[in-house]
Length: 357
Ligand code: TXA
Ligand code: MG
Image: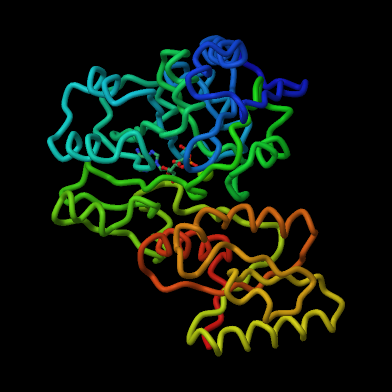
């Protein structure tokens, strides 16, 4: 039986361990052993921290859903140490699938492939497809390679909360529900992987990430993209899209429109709410942070570097939580490059609360 642990997880600091020593690290071996025994391990990837367990074991996978409080109809991504393992396991890989693996793996691209029945059925929530990815992070690679089994891993947060980009975020959400938490430092992409569905007639981006629409079009020619629209509740294509997601504890409002008007509007709203005694936060970028006054102003990367905003977004939302901010007003970004992924997460985190100026 694989029941949830009540005692605290073992925290392991791997931040100073050189990549070439990770494979022989006793802590990595112990965590890999725990995975083989059906337990849960939190580990860093290049996107966000993952909550891993044996993808072949029904008990181990069900325990992931329970630990996160995740609805059981929202399927998981299966992680592998290397592309060769995926090629060996899947007998019917299409040529676009191979092409994308060669180009982007290891890396932040998840591919939805026809399900050949290799995993516990709760991994795919009964769908005829399965999500797979090979992460690009030395700790993830060492752990997956040592365990030698496919690992199902959603982001290591309680369901509905922002994904963890630091080990301490995962600790706060899950320390009483996992065996190990491996600390590999801050994740460098900061948002979850791009999810690309290859089981449809036209390849379709179900979740934007740092492998962008433009990059995929360059490889494949034609690509569809499910953008910021809210999917119809009964027929979501990535089941995860129908749930409120990535949300900080505060109410988040997005202000959209002309950049300068936006900033004026934000300050006006914030001053009004602060006058009522509220703890109010502003989410901005380094370029504009000094123009504002609020209970807390958080600069989330540089507007001129979309990837830097992506990298810091969840960490910024966690900062508001820790300061017990009640209300957040956020700037918004033009829909190009990594900003597409940033806006996708912001719109969901705001639960659709948008003010146009
Ligand atoms: O970067 C990432 O992808 C991180 C790290 C840990 O690898 N993982 C992650 O997992 O974000 P999770 O469970 O938080 O998000 C998985 C997303 C969900 O939106 C889910 O609905 C979708 O992938 N998904 C999984 N299997 C699917 C399938 N067969 N068809 C459509 N969507 C699927
Ligand atoms: Mg998640």
